Length: 323
Image (tube, rainbow, N blue to C red):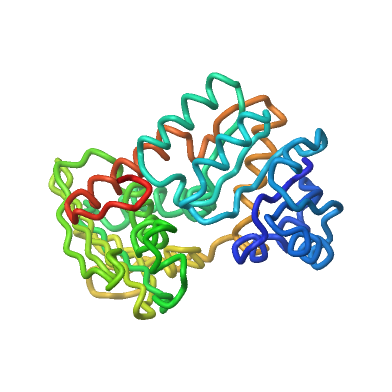
């Protein structure tokens, strides 16, 4: 699968070594708004071609999958551009700015018969099944609550504090906590309550999100751009609890009983970085002619955007592009 990267920034640089290590992926092209930046990226990471414009790369008939690595404020524009050129897409999270954009992407991709998926890497990882299998086994009994946190000291990063870049904690790191809850507790939700502390720029800096499920379960999520958290996800039952180390890239799952005795610890399978799973699934989907991912179908991406829209509505937080 010949891969083209749209956007030569930080996330592209983080994923490029993993792409290069995969036999199923050929590091073919990279495009940036600056040819010099694209050329430097291509040389550093072993890509064959560099383009100083996005459409220029999309006109290359050799490109089979485009990985969109631009700020999420620009995802909608860039996904639609790829679809218009008939290019399969793997787009970084958050998928779009809002649910309306996500729905338009889904409709356009279906109309054109083009594969589109969201690169929320935890959805593709083996840890997802490991956690759900443990819950289903009954080892911790009847599950009642879930807690998860994800916080980094990133408040001085432009993509975080700039409203024009759809900044804030929610779309950048909150999306991981939300996906963690949805993957392991589902979507049969009664209501959602939140509390937020806004940044001076008018975007969210830290928040708690409490999800009440119709069957009585509850999930509590915490995100902040001001501090480093332990990033743990804990799932509580009446016979014990599971501790997931790092919800942003799970490394292990530990099972404890009600006396806090460790029953077992499951290490996730050895991986390159964790990014590989989403690219491998894209390769399989393209080979089999699918236009959506099994791990993150577009209906799920739309749902997550609707969920985050509803939270922003509680806060009265509107991005400049939405006014």
